[in-house]
Every structure is written in structure tokens, then in C-alpha cells.
Image 1 (cartoon, one colour):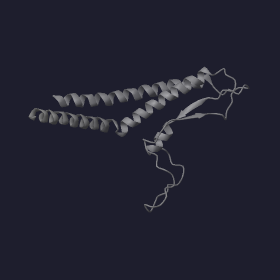
Image 2 (cartoon, rainbow, N blue to C red):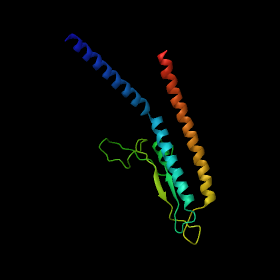
Image 3 (cartoon, rainbow, N blue to C red):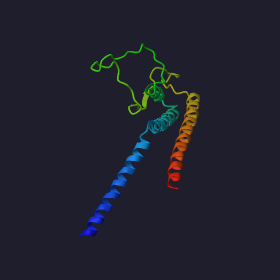
Image 4 (spheres, rainbow, N blue to C red):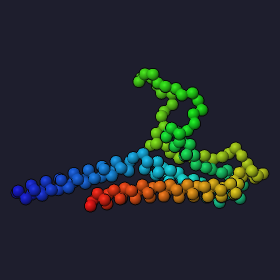
Amino acid sequence: MFWFFVYDIVLLTRQIKERVFIAMIEAVFSSEIYQILEKSLNASAMQHQMISNNISNVDTPGFKRSEVVFQSKLNEALGLAEKQEMPLYLTHVNHIPISPKITVQNVQPEIIVNNETSLRPDGNNVDVDSEMTKMAENTAYYSALAQITSLKLSGLQSVISDGRK
């Protein structure tokens, strides 16, 4: 009977340690920098797909190019965007906000189809040279994000491995 009690305590202790470890890991990876990196990598990958789709449909009559809008939304959420209107402030807690505050958690990439321009008589508005330039820029951007993510994770791994010594 005593050994069952000891076994239950050991098992319970192990479960608590696992939950605490999982909570610590979730806390580390839910920090704003990791959210920004994850969302930026996802948006860049989506942009790569849109550019590839635009290039593959360069000869499709009536095709309209698409692009991903993300960076301006992220800049707004981080407070880096240039304000075009006069800032408004709430003077009381019960006042209705003018516009909802955009946070990093709320920022999502958005696909926009450009219907306004048309470069050719067949209605297609894809310029291959422009798309190839955007592809190169996006590739460099994605590579930089991947390197930053790798550095952040290497630093975390270093802290964990040095903590064991």
C-alpha cells in the first residue's frame, strides 16, 4: 500500500514538472518577437506563392496580378506606421473606441487582386520583369527572416545547454 502511495506521488510530481516545462516553453515561444517572425515568414511564403502564380499566368488573357499586404499592417501594429489622421484619445473608460487597436496577434496577411491596371489589350496586368524583381526581394527578405529566427533559436539553445552544466 505504501509503495502505491509513493508511486502516485512520483507520478504526480513528474506530471507537474512536465506541465511547468510545457508552460515555460509556451511562454518563451509566445513572446512578441517569435510571433512577429512566424507571421512574417508565413506572409513572405504566401507572397512567394502569389508572385509565382502571377508569373505562371503571364500569358493568360484577363488575368489580374495578386499580392500580399502584410508589412504595412505589421508596421501599424508595432506603431511604426506614419499616421495620416489626427490622433484621437479616449477620455473615459466607457467611451467607444474610434478604431480597434491592431495588435501583433491580430495581424494577418491579406491577398489583394489588382484590378485597376492593364498592361496589354488582352486585360492581363502582369509585368514579368517587375514580378521577377519582387521575387528576388522577397527571397532576400525570407532568407533574412530565417537567419534571424535561427539566431534567436540558437541563443535559446545556448541558454538551455549552458543551464544544464
